[in-house]
Image (cartoon, rainbow, N blue to C red; front, side, top):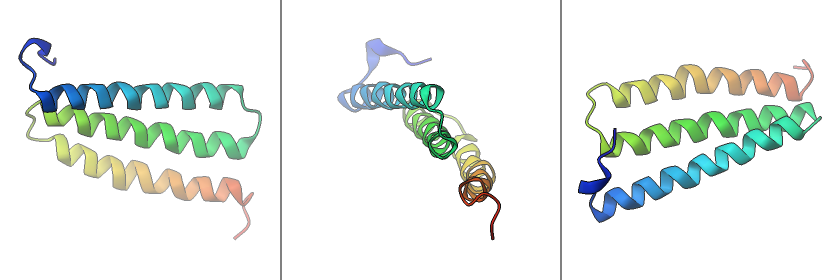
Length: 96
């Protein structure tokens, strides 16, 4: 939990950035729900995923965790590259 009473100027900037990224992720989710196009939905899913990773990285700047950056690297490699590759297959409709 973030202690808002003892935040420095840098801490407040990071918290504001987290809220801005959260707003962008929520806007992306709304666009994905309202869109009927598969291409738009697949691109927005990557936007939401990487936005959540960015919010987690920003959160780790304010909280000490020994495993935080390992989680981010695994998320970027395993859960970031593979869905992007599958998204390219969706966009090309299975053509190689």
